[in-house]
Length: 400
Image 1 (cartoon, helix red, strand yellow):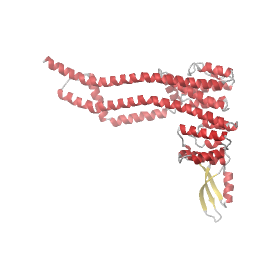
Image 2 (cartoon, one colour):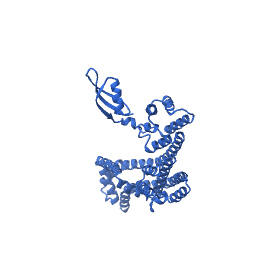
Image 3 (spheres, helix red, strand yellow):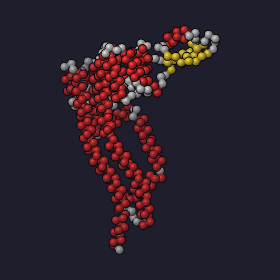
Image 4 (cartoon, one colour):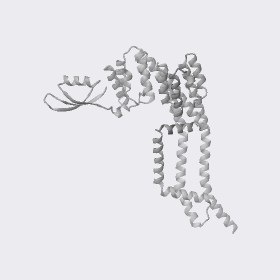
């Protein structure tokens, strides 16, 4: 329920400032008049970002959806079910969220309207499914489908995160080793070579120069890395840069196919969920395009929406040179011609997710030897730059 900042005058003529919650300013004015207050100014207050940004771990959220579904199927009203869940929840974000939703529902707001207050936990597509369930009087079914969908998405996300642990650890260890060699070992060898007055090979001179620059100007390098990171974050908000970046990523061997199938699985999952909840296909595609996480695929879906708006089926409305995997058009065609679009989207979701996991496993199998090769090459180059002057020195001693 909206909260308003009120400046009012009481019956003694004193000015009072207070905060009141009300459905709208008219109801609030009546409420103030009952309290013998005459409003002078009523201004809506923006919701607290800390409150609207509350979010739960995916597993906890899915558990709440299942509990609410079970109570609704047992004939418990939504108001009573939410009150019970809020009372049983441990102190923290879950209790705060359920308590706020219960208060709004008890005052007559639909569940999906009350949920939309927590924009981070209930993004547009989640709230749309709940709204469709309420409008069709099939809220328990909508909650079950939503819980199943969120579980699959969470499993896919956790698989991707686990896959990134190994390369992240190896890259961090490699960076730490290079920093140690360049900052601590190379300067000592440089001092030894200087006392010996040796003619150093080009690779050794380059390494010593790089080590000196790193040791004396490291704040500049840190600032440069930070600037590049900020610049990339700012550019990521620009549509053209995102489109170019995602197009290039899709062309990376093996890794690009993994991203393509992950994005396809996300699109199919969200589009199926909204379609089965009764959301029109145009609206479902708009939300699905936003949730693909890939600007190239989102552009293809935007083009497809234009074709669907003039009567084309989805499989024909996709661009001829779309970036989706090749199996998506035959699957959509089979689903739309038989009136089983939801089943076709489910097949696309499951098959794309399975392909993404297989390609991710293949990529990891190639990644380990690749990282070891790169690490060996870097350390070998540094070691070679140390040993070449020593070989030259030993060769001169033997010649004498």
